[in-house]
Length: 295
Image: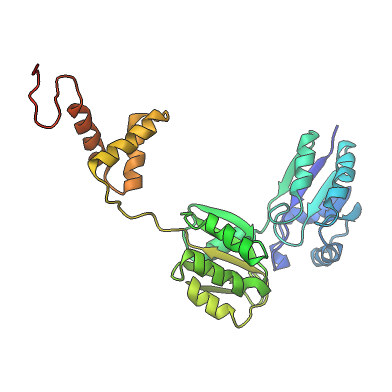
């Protein structure tokens, strides 16, 4: 029998947000792997729990070396609890490497759901939350940061980023440059803590605000790109685009629908163009002004 790897969400600010199961798992685990053992100690004190198992550090600097050791203990039947400083392990935190190794060795992996900075910021942002994508931390170097932002400039889903407070002004300026200064965004600072603040404004205005310096844990939520406006495409171009999609294996119905979305026109307009083109090239047709059956 193999053991179990438990990924435990921890509070992103207020320790009162700790899930009820967290204390029980901390007390029962054979091994508690923590991103920061000092912060773990403060958390256990706040929860009034004393871990009975061995406590080890598991952070970016040692996860490659420590993962085989933890997998060996899991394979031997141990219950290993993984906690990071805040939020869910492996989400821009250590954990993915251990989860992947555990899965590879047939070890059961489960979770204690807990607070999430990503979902909390989305809910507070006032921006659309039906579709979103999480981009984590952007590269520190300016050129690489701009390159990453350009990759998602046309992304229509709401975007969520983590950022360090001392880089926030540079990041917001880069976003304003790539996405446009008028793109809506929200900067969520110190969520669930005493000085929680949510700034909702355009990227240009937020960049000007951040230039004065910002402190605390930061999550940035940015509105997705606006859908493209109607394209001025003639009937022949609509028919050509449908034909390209059909030649790639799409059914005509789906191809017509996709081209209509691309062009920003009603599906009926694309359908009529395709039918007209088909009739114009049907047997017995001579083209623009010929008479059927001639010859």
